[in-house]
Amino acid sequence: MKIQLGIASLLFVRLILAPVSLSAQQPTTLYVNRTDPTCAGYSPCFTTIQAAINSAGPGSAIRIQAGTYPEQLSITGKNNFQSATEIDRIVIEADPTAQPGQVIVRGSPGACTGNYAIRLQQSKFITLRGLTITGTGGQAISLLGGNNQNQDIHIELNRIFGNGSSSCDGGITVARGNPGTLIVNNLIYSNGRSGISFVDADGGPHYLINNTISGNQWNGIEIARNHTVTLANNIVNNNGTASGTTGGRFGVRRESSTMPQPAGIKLLNNLICGNSQGQISAQVLDSTDSSNFTPLGNEGPGVGALPGCELPANLFGNVNGTDNQPNTADDDFSLKANSLAIDVGMDPRTLGFNPAYNPIFEADFVIEGIRPPTATPIDRPHSMPALSNFPMRRR
Image 1 (tube, rainbow, N blue to C red):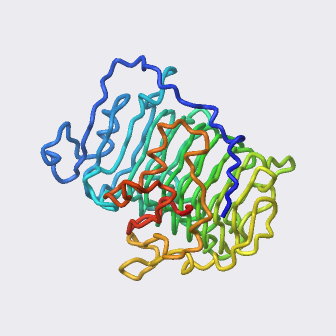
Image 2 (cartoon, one colour; image 1 turned 30 degrees about the vertical axis):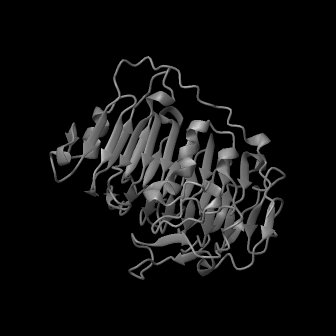
């Protein structure tokens, strides 16, 4: 399949040159283990993630060892100085020695208000990576906006399911501002209301790449009227599981406006299928969109037909996982052999990002040696058992 990339209009104008930080604090690796105060011999060691976050300075890495952490995490004022750059990035991640799914953050259960799992405010250059976030009453990850907005937040390789309720979004919410938000390689499923929501009047630019967004109550992706968002290589499937139509039940929904800005949402090579009220709402599509697929392909410019893509069995090998139960921690969104999602993707490394970001897009192809030395990321069908993090590709 010849794939249109539409690269010229996607140059990432905020390329990071990584000048030397004015901070004198030296980067540090901090370890967290809830049940072992020695962190298996690594130090400094903390028994809560929040304590490690509070201690982290520019350039720090927080490695969370296997376990379940019933914590509500507040990331506030980190790297919040004018000269902060990529070199100051703080990485909060599952320890690389842990198996996928072994680091679980449960957040705060109960009613929606204030019961997030992870909230970021007034922070810059933060990465959240490799976490399973489930069971919280509100948002799994919330980026506050306006005077509390963040900058260059990366959300990578996380499994986010079973959060929120019919009263509030349970996936990821991004409020006003928050430029440089990158949401890549995540599984977001079975959450209250919408899987990813961009709220308030405006914000961005934001980038959603290589995510699988499935089975959320309302929309897969909900975008307020003036946010600027690029969506590439996402599978948005079977969202809108709740009854009714309030708030929408689309794959991708743009808030209605008397002054719509469809060019503010760029859709490239997404598979948007089986969502209960429709695949793509009005005021989304224009000539900047290309190579997307829906079951009928009649939504507008840049969309083609791929009959049968609404059926998970035509995409994924074993969605319900080994326990054969839906909406649980072992749900498996790996692509099946001859999946309809194969051959409809693009190479996100061509989107104009800083080349230093390429490992983010290639991440699931280097884990556990699944990529042969002679293969390139877009040539190799995905074979990881737990995550479908590079969901659509050429081969």
